[in-house]
Length: 315
Image 1: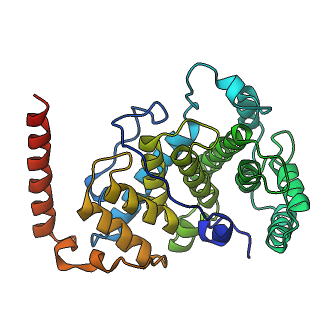
Image 2: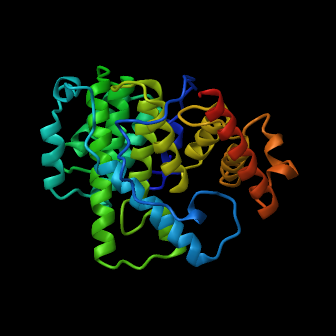
């Protein structure tokens, strides 16, 4: 497996089952003042100009940064729930300049990934931990991978509370690098929009996706369907195929949101176009789910009717 900041490069490590629970309307883990999204950024699959695509991508990246830098909200005892790595250490990590992309670091991460795939989890995790150290390399990708090792007990005692701290650290550091890349006016091309070259879009996407899994399954934090859906949707719109599929499932099942089969089809389509096909999903290509203006208007009307019916039943 080739190590890089592209979310697809480490996909063999990130495989999880599915969990269902009742949806909620709000979440303490999702900031109320998230950056607004333009209309064209909310429906995948629409034919859009390059300018509109860039505007939508920038809007979702701004939202990812907001999620990444949001203080982890837990019910009253954050420090105790975070395990050995305290919240204060996460803040200190952001004060130290995070590293990314140095040849030595990339080689070490690749070595650790190779060891992981060969089954040498102890040595692999030790390397991830060294590179993830906020007082050392402070590398965001290593922090994601070390967080996963801590979460699942790969060559180390499982510590879900500490795992989510590293995942949040990775997200924050990646957001910082992305912000610095923008300030440096690094030229954006179709290639580095996808891979995050010059910034840390890949690491940011991975961290957001894995935090979504934490909220979904209750790994190191209370289960939170609303937060999981928000984080999945953000990662999906940053280009993660697994996240695209998970958003489709959330919308289909009403996990953290209202059920919406039309929008579920759009995200499942996006996932398939990105190379993630699933058995039994032929229904998503029915003509009635095509994102045409006529179908979109019909979907909007039906959604409004359902909303009025629900509102009336609660009177």
